[in-house]
Length: 505
Ligand SMILES: Nc1nc2c(ncn2[C@@H]2O[C@H](COP(=O)(O)OP(=O)(O)OP(=O)(O)O)[C@@H](O)[C@H]2O)c(=O)[nH]1
Image (cartoon, rainbow, N blue to C red):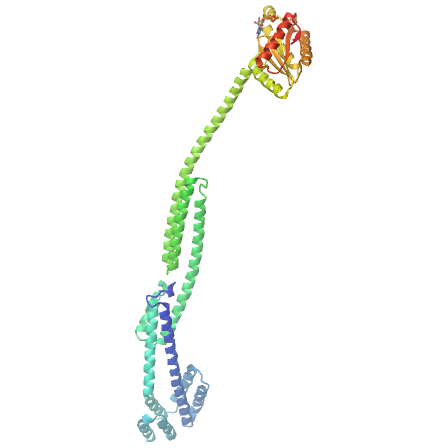
């Protein structure tokens, strides 16, 4: 960010420019050093020559020599020269008769170009025209200050040019660097100082300071940006989670969520590209804020829409569940009604025994089983003897009671695997699977005897009741009808034989 964005030329151009400036500066400093050395040597020689000129100045001159020999920094030299100057100023104002011929000899030799002026000063001094030795030094200083060689002139001009180049380079840097707003004013002032031709050294120091501050500022901004983007990523992740948590099962919602995810991803990519190119944090923050708001609104709209659809689905689901419950209730009711109907269709309501329909079904099953496994199957057909008399004598209700009692006795005293049914009227049928007729005859006869012994009470009277039974066994090729007809034939024989008996055919 910031420093890498130049208006033209690019970083390489300014890097080269900077190094050139450094080289120039170095060259300038070298030349300065040579000049300084020359000056130092001159001062040393001058101090040696002036030694003894006024003994009160000797210690100062000695220190200056030491300082120059030790090659100490200008500051200290300046200090010593200042001390020397102060000492000289405070010297006795009385004219001095000290011999200065040696000094002038040296100076004339060292400054041959100024020989005449020096001679003139010497004459003035020796003729006592100088008020004091301080006046002499001031005259010499003034004279020698003007002593500038052509070489010195060139070096000074060169230094001036270098300073201008450095100044222009710094100006270019300050104009082309994309500085944060906070530093704009300082940079502007530095530019003005450079344009006004102020000494480049001080401006250079201030510019370096400014650029270092800018660097720190950008570093802090970068950190702030990283923190901000991290917070932003967390916020977007949170939003993404909320968005993806909505109605995960719904296919339509899935499509909408995909679209939303795409939108959010596009906005994020845009933000990342903007933040990579951004040079200022504040506008970027504003941009991100706006984008976040837009994303948040999109998610809110999506959630609202999604919630509406979810509520609609829930209402439909609730209605559907209600309908299913009603259907379940109806199914249970229908089943019980069907069971009742089935019961009614297959059971005799008076005795509770399976009826003729049930008997037909069961007989077909037993015939099929006997046929398949070659097992015996016997069938007994019962008929209550003189039942009409019971009805007639004791009433129809007593007749019903007799039917119920017979049904119970026939059911109770047979095997569990046997099947007892009311065939119709006062007739009953017993199926005896896996039972040969001769064994079945023993069973049915025992039953007949039980019924005969039991009797029942009708209108307080003991009424005896007997049964006649026709028995037969399944033979290959028998059907329901043929088997029943044969058993019924046997019953007829039992009736004919005097009733209360069992006949096997
Ligand atoms: N109470 C009552 N009587 C019935 C029922 N079904 C048939 N009956 C009567 O049973 C009687 C059968 O009489 P019949 O067929 O003449 O035979 P029976 O009197 O038993 O004489 P045999 O069979 O020859 O011994 C009739 O009077 C029918 O009305 C019933 O469910 N309840």
